[in-house]
Image (cartoon, rainbow, N blue to C red; front, side, top):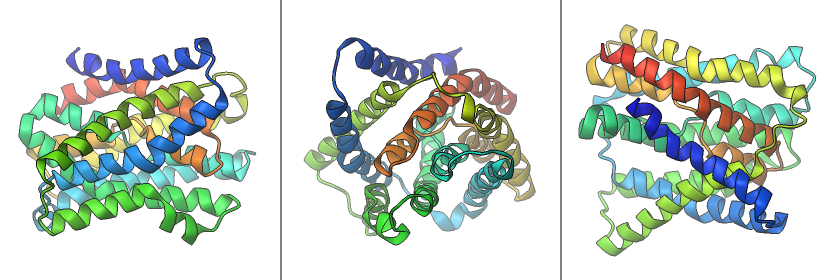
Length: 298
């Protein structure tokens, strides 16, 4: 029940965005401005804030990170399986494809802290810090490949990748931001979570979804059920156990990141379908995450 209540605020923000879009009469220009603010300013600040505050010891955590990357790679491979059987525009497929392996790091860190305290947050922070650039790079590459823009240009201009790279460089250099800077980054990070989810809700449309329903259902199964199984077996094979195994399996079971919608919209993709999948995986995780947590803790 505590995990369900933990997920409720994020899902409520999505519903709030839907309500604001419907009843406040704010135009498309307003929401495009919100999307640009989140994409270019708030999300990079969130990444820098999270990574610079995480103690990274990659040499001592290679099996843990290998398990997390194996789960993400499984999501990428499983996401490609339906491609030959579906008649969808390439850009629509590329937009939805990222929902099979991207993860909501906000919920991940919150769940890890709730269940395992500070050690859980530190372990999940290490996974998130290493996995974010990989997920962003693959997502940008897929969308740029099927869009009308150059892959190299979009990768180099992507603020999420730059934010991640900046955070890693500062972390490796041992730089600790002054307290006022930490406070500023924290405020921007909080705004990123709230506005990002509100923007997801504002773009949520459940009509006209028949053409992508089969792909959406498959990606839901992949993200919430199959990837945690992959992480469980790979982790045990690599000798990961205890708290580390519990955290990496929960990482694999996370719903899709809200930034997937921002990226799809900024690169001309199918934001509507991505928003639906984000909402669906978040709602579904309110049932699946408590089950996984109960299984791992007993």
